[in-house]
Length: 192
Image (cartoon, rainbow, N blue to C red):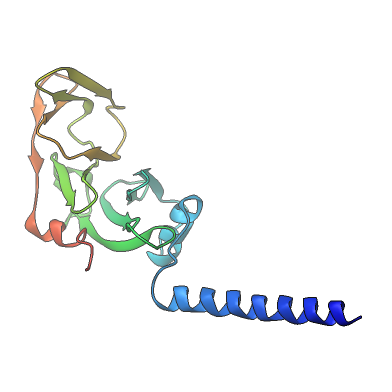
């Protein structure tokens, strides 16, 4: 009987310790969104309607999502980072949205936005793909790699930062502009 009481007391103390540890980790921002719940968390936190399309890319270091309505006359981008060190899940780092003032797809940019994700070693490439990009070429000094894309579909990709240059080609084999805006760099910085 005495062993039963001892085990029960030890079990209760252990459960209380684990509960306190979980509360402490959550309060200090060490518990993020699990990988399998990222799109659900994005739709909830950004209030994205069910009829909007969400496309994205997730790695073990970061996630980028592009979301847009059926008309494709506006879009939003959100970035999540999986922090190094003792943390669990992905943490929202920021977002931005773009809308044409006339409410038409023609007013949106044909360019590819690039967002440097500092500390992760990745760049996020985002586009509504109005230019009809069908492939990306990595012009490395040793070998050349190609990534195929659907020329009719918007995309959000995470690719490694490297010395290699990337070229985006449309259906007519013409290169497409890449733009990096300083304001979009801010959303991806990881706080110290």
